Amino acid sequence: MKPRQRKQYFRNMKRSDDSEREKRRKRWRLIQELGEQRIPYLSPADPGFQELWDSSYAGLALRQCSVLPDGLHERVQSALITLQRRGCLLRDLVRVRDRDVFTAVSRALVGQPGYTYRYLDTRLFAIPWHCEGEEGQKDENGKPCCDSDLRDACKAFWELNQFFCSDVRPQTNARGVKRSRSDTENSEDTPGEGMCEESVKDRLLEEKQEKEKKEEEEEDSSQGCSHSSPLSSTPPPNVGRLVQFNITLINYMDPTVMTQLKEEPYYGMGKMAVGWHHDENLVPLSPVAVYSYSCPAEPKNEGVTEKDGQGQSKDKEKETETEGEGTCKEELKEEREGLEKEEVQKEKACWRVGLKVAWDIHTPGLALPLQSGDCYYMTDDLNRTHQHCVLAGDMARFSSTHRVVQCCTRTLDYIQKRCSEALENLQTDPEKNTKSLKSLLPSTLQHTEDIHNEHIQVAFILSASQRQTAWP
Image (cartoon, rainbow, N blue to C red; front, top):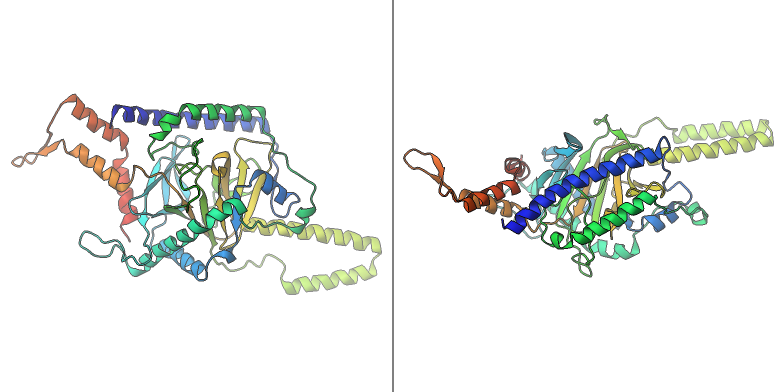
């Protein structure tokens, strides 16, 4: 590692610590400013939902399940279940607020061979997906890396990725199909977009810091740091060309098993499967595409059946005939309120994605229900300026989240090459079978130390590589 690169590496480490402290400071200030009150949020049942989406969340685009090509749903959903049954989806050990914790969501990384993805100080290695017409990866003995079922599963993720690559660009401008109730069209409520004075100062300070670090960021590696993608004054790669997602992070969670889910603290949106965050270590301003699949489950008989509903309706008709006109109006009002509450309960039974403007307590949040098979895109700078969370529904859920990761370095090939460089200074005595260093020159030792610092978690990385490339 060159002196300039070494200096940059330690700057990145310090920047990561500073970023985490800054997050804590902002979070604490928001909690103090909010006190006991909750920030409002809108869902499709609320007036003004569509206007809020258009004005403050325009980078979000929804694609309903019907837009996917014929047969792709079945192949992708079968692939997700295959990974789960084969034990490929595991909970990750991550670093959150100076604590090592296991994620509530089980994950696996699938993508270009040798690619990696780092989040919350944990690096995942990609299970290679199989392109159309490709025979598949071979091991050192020339045997296929996996059986036909797993090969078909990885190919299905590649097919979904190809669809997203071609579909996301038009949605950047069109914003996709947005669900909303018809009454929002006549709504006069236009949510504000104000930010507190401290948030504006923070945003200006961040922009100033990013400008000063522009030269450093050009040499920055994929290691990055645990904060949102940096602001860039230059257009992102692939602008005007086809977006090339290179990995997908597969997620799975069953909320009936994970009973310790936290409540969303700022808006009261419900139980969170994944807390508020920006997606980390992506190519600046690159889009994110998400496929959502809720597992089939037996319907709960807690609600009113169609037959019961008809009976209750007849009873109400009889009561209405015997009672006065005023009573009828009161019952209609109660029935309407009951239907609205039922609509809200149905929305909360679905898995939802929640969005908010980062560090802003004045703009209402957005909660978007996701039907099984729906897809959504986060485009433009939405991932940088906003945060999102995943709100748990009643059923188990898979998701396939496609991203453009920074992989100039930190690929498996790069890591193996750097480790080999360090081991070149190691020799073995053939008679005693002992190991020793070839050279004790300060420059040679410094080079080895630089590689060690760069890959401080090599042992963990190699175990992760074995975990996600060796099939069960």
